[in-house]
Amino acid sequence: MPRRLPGTDRSFAAPTPTALVPTLHVLRLLSIRNFVVVESLELELERGFSVLTGETGAGKSILLDALGLLLGDRFETRQLRPGAARAELAAMFDIGGRDDVAAWLADEGLEADDDPDTLLLRRVLDAQGKSRSWINGRPATLAQQKAVGAMLVDLHGQHAHQSLTGADAQRALLDAFGGFATLARACADAWRSWRLAVDARDAAASADAVNIAHREALEARLAELTALGVTPGEWAATSQLQTRLAHAAALTEAARAAEEEISETDDALARRLGALVARLKTAAAHDAALGAIIALVEPARIQLDEAARELRGYLAKLDVDPAELTRIEARQAALHDAARRYRVRPDALEALHGDTATELEALAQSTDAKLLARRAAETAAAWKSLADELGAKRRFAASELESKVTKTMQALAMKGGRFEVALVPLATPTSHGQEQIEFRVASHPKQPLGPIAKVASGGELSRLALAIEVVTSEVGNVPTLIFDEVDVGIGGAVAATVGRLLQSLGSRRQVLCVTHLPQVAAFADAHFRVTKAGDADAIHAAVDALAAKARVEELARMLAGSAITPKTRAHAQELLLQHRRPARR
Image (cartoon, helix red, strand yellow):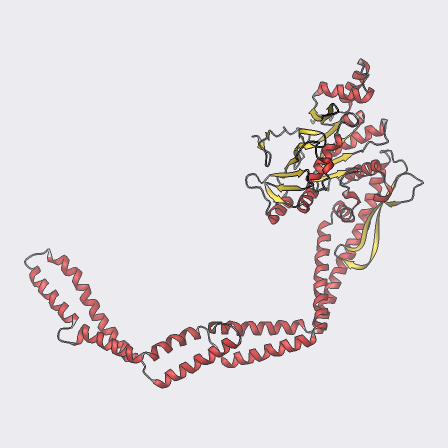
C-alpha cells in the first residue's frame, strides 16, 4: 500500500525487495524539494548495493548533502535553490525489528502513531537560515535527528559524516567486532557505581559539621515521637471520642426522648403500630387482599422494636465521665502541638516517626567513614577486574582487526598500507576502561602511522572505511552505508575490487555509492543516473532508475565519454554480465 510522506501530499509505493538481498531496516525513500539545483526529486532505494552515477557537476553529491541535513547537519542558505522561499527534505526508513531504535523513539516521545516499523524524517529550511525538523510527524531537535541518524546511516566521504574518525565510534566498533559489547557495558556500570561510592565517601568527609547537627535534630525528634507513642489511627479515634464525650448530655437526652416516643409511652409508635397490625389481621379474615398491606406494615413494627432495644443499649454504654473527656482533650492537645512543631498533620505523626528512624539509620551509614571507604574500595576492585578483562579481550580483537583490515587495504590502491588499532593507556579510570582506542593508518609503506582523521585523504578515508566495513560487516549495527569518493585515484583491477567488496557488503547491509567508475557501477544491484539540464536562468537536476538497456548506455558513457560506439556498448554489456550478483541456487 502506498505510504504518504510526512507533511506532504505525496505518496509512493515501496520498492520490491530484491530476492538476492535479505537485508532489512533500510532507507526506503529520499525526497528533495528546492535544494541547490533540485526543484523536485524523489529517490526510491532498494535493498542491496546501489550506485549513483552521472557527469561531473550533475549533482550526485547533492543527494548526500540532503541526507546529511536530515541526519542533523548544519544548513547554509546557499543550499537553498535560487528563487525558492524554502527547501523541504524528507526520508523514510524501514525500522522493523530494530528494538534499539524503537526504544529510543519511545523514550523521546517520537514513536510513530500508525506504523511502528516506519521512521519518517522531515526538515524544512528557509531563506532566513532557519530550519524546522520532525521525526514521525512530531517536532524534533537537530540533536535528536543526529542521535537517531547515527543508528541508521553511516556516511563515508570527505564531506560527510565520518564516524570512523570518532574515538567513541572506534571503541564501539572494536568492542562489537570482538563480541564483548556486553562486557563493555558492565564495565561502564561498574565505573558509575565506583564513582557514586567515591562521591558518597568524599561528601561525608566534607560535611561532618552539617551531618552532626542534622543527626542531633533527628535524634531529638525520634526521642520525642517515641515518648509520645502515637498509635495507628489514634488521631481519628480520639477526635471521634472527644466529640462524643463533649456532647454526652445532648446525646443522652436525644436517645431517651427517642426511646420514649418509640416504646415507653401509652401512645408510643410501636404500640400504636402493633394495634394497627392486629386490626388489619382481623379484617383480613374477610378479605385476603389485606394480606399484602399487612406484609408491608409488619416489618416497620419489627424495626421499631429493634430500634428501641438499640437505644437502650446505647444509653447503657454512653459515658458522661468528665475526667475521661479531660484526658482525651489533653491527648489531642499533645498530638496537635507535636504536629504543628514538625509541620505535619496530626494523623501523619506515626509515619513521621517511622521516616525519622529510617533517615537516622541512613545518615548513620552515610557518615560511617569506614563503611564508605570499604564500599569505595570494593567498587573500585569490581571495576578494575572488569576493566582488566575488557583490556585483554580488546588487545586480542585489535590484533585480529588490524590483520584483516590491512590485508583488505592491499587490494584497494593502498599497497603497503598498514592499519593499527592502538590501545593507549589512560592515567585515570574511565567508564570505557583503562585504555583509549585509536585507529591509526599509513596509506603507503614510507608513511608513518597516524590517526586516520589526520593522515588519510578523502578518497583514502573512504576506501579505508570500506575495508573496515567489509571486515566488520557481520557485527555492525548501522544498516545503511553510504560511500562518496570511494574511487578517487583508482582504476582498473582495483576499481573492480572495490565494486566486488561493495557488492559483498550489500548482501548484509544497504549500500549506496557515488562513483565515476564503470567497474564499480557494474557490480550494483540498482543503478541511478543523475542528470542536470537548463540554462543560465534555471538549472534542474533529476535522477532516474536505470533498467538493463539504460544501464548499458550509462556504463558505455562512463567508459568512453560522449563518443559511444558499438564497441564500448559491447564492453559495457560484458561488464554488466560479468559483475552482476550471482543468482541464488
